[in-house]
Image (cartoon, rainbow, N blue to C red; front, side, top):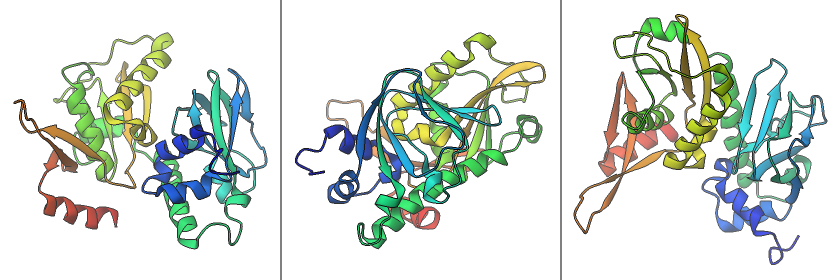
Length: 299
């Protein structure tokens, strides 16, 4: 496929995908030349349990849902990648994925991409390293501490309580998501007050899915599409009340936020790195300190 006639949606999808973060335009073009763009209709199955695993997909538009054998599911939206296990095993998929609405997907063959001599070795290594971080995310979820244990232990380096999730608490919640992502990961329990009282959230079971989507869309609006790749959000029962559990995986790359330094006409923005220090979200603005933390945490 020539880059001159390459659909812009392919390049856009790669640029929005966290697993291609830091790749130059030339490097993205090497991948894009072997990619295909296909349209899928609402309710259409992209792949099912046990299919031969050789293709990696990136959502260009629309949304999809992956159903796992254990009954759990995960939703995917624009910029998110799935099928990455096929880079390491051909034994078949672990789930089935269907379109929640009309969608466009970018796909490429693993055997094609990793064919000897097609991509520079360092490029293949960087891509494999990025998708390996995504796979580690799955293992993190399998061994995560129960909400009951987290509630018993209280707030700390990997847990924070929020009595509610509303306009007055959303900004602080976003800071905690960034702090956990830049550290070892962590969990936010919404519906638990600072004194550990389980107050719960007023959401009926039939509204779990739409409320979950609404929260995730608001987080992506505030923090960007990348944030969704680090999050798992579920409704759970704790002390006979409904709570929202937000699990944040460690980010493979630094996750910044922006602070407005002045409200005057010539206001300036400053990039901050927020990290988790015990039960506190610590904001680092000094460039030397940021570089020192990045060297220790991400290199």
